[in-house]
Every structure is written in C-alpha cells, then in structure tokens.
Length: 94
Image 1 (cartoon, rainbow, N blue to C red):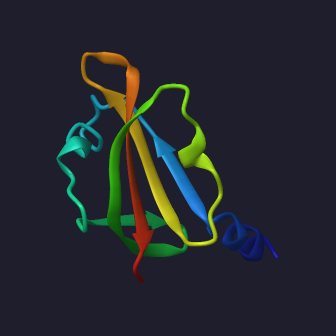
Image 2: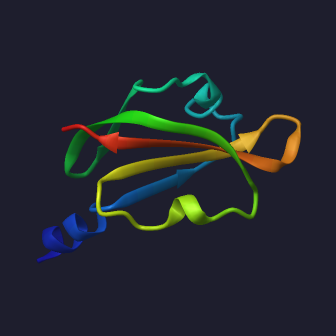
C-alpha cells in the first residue's frame, strides 16, 4: 500500500526549487528547448524533455498547478533580479 501512495504522488507536476548557487542548480539557465533532464527517485530514473524556459515573478505560482501529464518543474532565483525566478518545465518522455 505504501508503494501505491508514493506512485500517486509522482503523477502530474513534480516541482523542485533551490538557490542557483548549488552545483546542481547554478547552470539551470543554460538549458535549452528539448534538452533532456534525468530525475531519479526511489522508484527509478525518468527522463524529461524541456519545453518551457522563462522568467516569472517571484509571486507567480501558476507553474506549480497539478497537470494531467507528468511534468518536472524546476525553479530558481535569477541572478541580480530578486523579484524574478527562472522556471524550467519538462515533460516526461519515458
């Protein structure tokens, strides 16, 4: 039953946020359309294809809405622009 609960949490929009100063996030701004992101969790590794890269207002939460497709949403700060966030979204391809 625990596995079923975890699976239900991994359907839709997976949203992750971090400061852009870490090794994992400092180059997020270099991603391009159709780049592949591999995301690993307790259930394995899944690949996602980037389809959206944009700056959003720090108060814009619309990209956090749940989706019917499996989407990976990555958000980080924009260097020297405290009111903006970089939002990268990718759709699962496997």
